Length: 240
Image: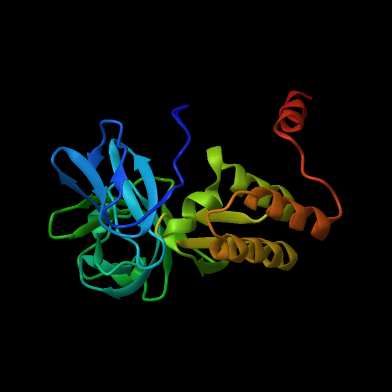
């Protein structure tokens, strides 16, 4: 996080006026008379100069810069088609990978059913999506399991400054990737995966009311028989 104002969590309905603080209208909004209004029921989110209304349920609407977890559904001689939990198809060109893929050789690298971590690099006005795995932080995710949640609940799963994910990892010791398209990949020992999956389902089922972090912390402390460390305690551990 960049130290800016806390992310807003208000729920709005179509026609509600949004206080965009000089931001541009994004997904799920419309501009009328220089003011930005909600075009659907959802949660207000401000990011990268835009104000969006994220639907409370439904499919994911792709945005450039989003990190997603996708599933390979088809392949051609120089690309793969990826299910990104969206109504819009998402091709991955062989040139947007870390491999030197020869024409017609795509199935040597990714096959139907494979799970990948990738980035959305562009979305045009016709909602044509382009993906990339060229950066070293992206790639195929092997093993583990994939859970689906509402894309609107992803910010709550991540938590402010990544606090919720850090809390889950502290107790369960799982490896976890959170896609902004509502897909989460987790891997670890069976007990850790079980408790992490339970927490993720609780977050997905939760409403906008406060107290979710306390609920998750209480569950994990009871499951593991110990309390969570505070940020100050984690800092102290890092100094010794």
